[in-house]
Amino acid sequence: MIQLFWPTDYDVITQRFGANPQNYARFGLPGHEGIDFRAPHRTNISACADGVVYRVSDGRDGNNYGRHVRIEHADGYKTIYAHMDEPLVEVGDEVKMGQRIGLADNTGNSFGSHLHLSLKREGEVARGYYSNLIDPTPFLMPFGWTPPEDEWDATELDKRIGDSCDCEKEE
Ligand SMILES: [Zn+2]
Figure 1: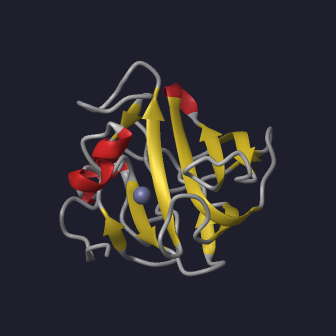
Figure 2 (figure 1 turned 60 degrees about the horizontal axis):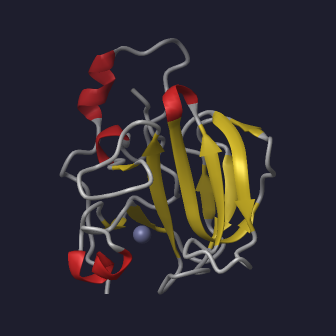
Figure 3 (figure 1 turned 120 degrees about the vertical axis):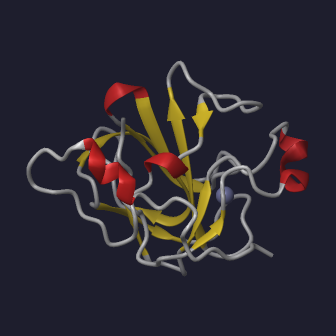
């Protein structure tokens, strides 16, 4: 079980996983395939968990994610941080949970500066999705949470965000 550190400086989710199916049908997806977070232009994007950077894209390949960073974690999990202005890590870098890895923007298929976060896990996929995409929501820790220095126990997970966050609808 992975714990995902809140990756932006703002306590606002602008689009949930699975939202707005009408916008994603053309990609063959049943809905939004990650979580969007408020992230104004050139604000900090942080790694959700310890891992190793396995891809950094300058966006010139036309990828919908624009300039983005992909990190591989333990237990087959991978996170993708999309629509950046500037990645601040390189392939092969070891990163720590909460470490700044880039600055936010609006590159790729995006309308307005924000962070799009996708979570993948080898051997798993959310119903109707593909490419090992799963819902990050159950793993996302609350804004302001920091991991304890010692091992934590599973009761920490009871504090996860659930449905209590301050959500906004994306235009
Ligand atoms: Zn998104």
